Amino acid sequence: MAFKGQTDYSHKGPRPKTGVLITNLGTPDAPRPAALRCYLKEFLSDPRVVEVPRLIWWFILNLVILPLRSRASAKNYAEVWTEEGSPLLDITQHQAAALQKKMDHVYGKDQIVVACAMRYGNPSIKDVLTDFTAHNVRNIIALPLYPQYCAATNGSTFDAFAKELSQYRWVPEFKFISGYHLHDAYLKAVTWSIQDYIDQNGEPDLILFSYHGIPQRYLEKGDPYYCFCQQTTRLVHARLGLAADKIMTSFQSRFGREAWLSPYTDDTLKSLPAQNIKHVAVICPGFSADCLETIDEIEVENRAYFMEAGGERYDYIPCLNDQPDHIDMMHDLVKDNLPFQFDSPDSQNNKA
Ligand SMILES: C=CC1=C(C)c2cc3[nH]c(cc4nc(cc5[nH]c(cc1n2)c(C)c5CCC(=O)O)C(CCC(=O)O)=C4C)c(C)c3C=C
Ligand SMILES: [Fe+2]
Ligand SMILES: [Fe+2]
Image 1 (cartoon, rainbow, N blue to C red):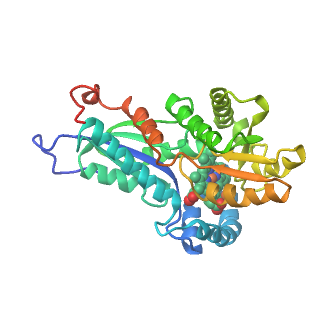
Image 2 (cartoon, rainbow, N blue to C red):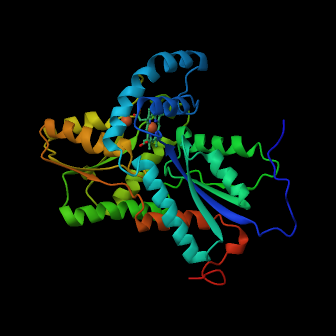
Image 3 (cartoon, helix red, strand yellow):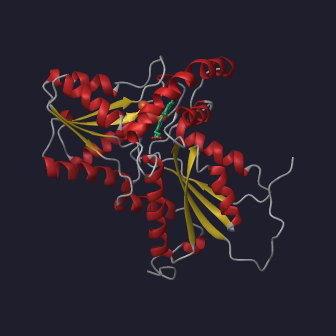
C-alpha cells in the first residue's frame, strides 16, 4: 500500500500551523431524492449508526429504506432548505467563520486555521484534512459538535479521522475532543438561552429537553449517551433553580421499528395537555445547530401534535448556533488542546 505524502518537504519551509476542525453530522447536497439516496446510503451504511448484521442490513437498506426514505426525506428537506442551502451546513459554516475570527483576535492572524466538515456528505473530513496538509497544518484539533458522547456520532467521527489519517505517511499531532456535556461554558450557554427565554416570555408550565434518540439496545450494550443526556438536563435544571416538575427529558427522531430511548418526544407532547400542561417550551441541547430535526420535526411536526391535543402555547428555544457564548465555548474547548506555543494567549501571543 502507498501512503499519502508530500515530496516537496524542506527544512526551511514555512512554519507548521495548527488547524481546528469542527464537524457535524451531514446533510444532502440538494433536497432531491437522488441526493438523498446518496447521503442516506453513506450515513445508514455506517455500522456505528445501524448495528445490524451487514448482509441483512444491505438488503433492507437497498431494497426498502433507500427507495422509500429518499423520496420522503427529500420532501422534508425541501421544507427547510433556504437560499444558503441546508441550514445545518450553513450554520456550521457560520460557526467556523466566527471561531476563526475569535482565534485571530486572541492569537493573532494566520496562527490557527479553522475549518468545518461533515461526517457524511460534503465538505468531507477527508477533503478538509487534505487541504490542511497542503497548507502545512501539522497540529490538528478535532471538535465534533455533539456535546453528549454517542458511538453513533462522536465515535463514528473518530473513525472517519482515524481512517483517513491511517493512510498518511506523516501523521500530524492530533487531538480529538470526544464530548463536552460537563463543560462549564456549555452548561452556562444552554442555561442562559433558557433564562433569556423565561425573562422575555415568563415561565412556561414545562420546559421539555428533547434529545435525538438512539436504539435502547445501544444503551444496554454500554453507550453512555442516555446518561449524559439525563446529566445535562439535571445540571441545567440545577443552574436554573426551577421546581422539579418544570423540567422533563425526552427523545426524538425515532427511526425503524425497535424500541428507542424513551419517553418519546412526540408521545410526550401529545400527552401533556391532558395533564393540564398547556404552555410548553422545547429545547434541544444535544443539537449544536438547527437542522431538519429541530426546524421541521420540533418546530412544525411536534407543535402540531401538542396543539391538536389541546395545548395552548408552544415555543421552541433555538440551538446555540453561532451565538457568541457558543463560539466562546468552542474556543474554551480548543484552547486546552493547543500546542505549547499558544500557552499564554493573554501574554505574548495576544495580538488583540
Ligand atoms: C439509525 C438511525 C439513526 C441514529 C442512530 C441517529 C443518531 C443520531 N443522529 C443525530 C443527529 C442528527 N441526525 C440527523 C438526521 C438523521 N438521523 C437519522 C437517523 C439516525 N440518527 C436519519 C435517517 C436522518 C436524516 C433525515 C431523515 O431522513 O429523517 C440530523 C439532521 C441532518 C440535517 O441535514 O439537518 C442530525 C443533526 C444524533 C445527535 C444522534 C445520536 C445521538
Ligand atoms: Fe440522526
Ligand atoms: Fe427526523
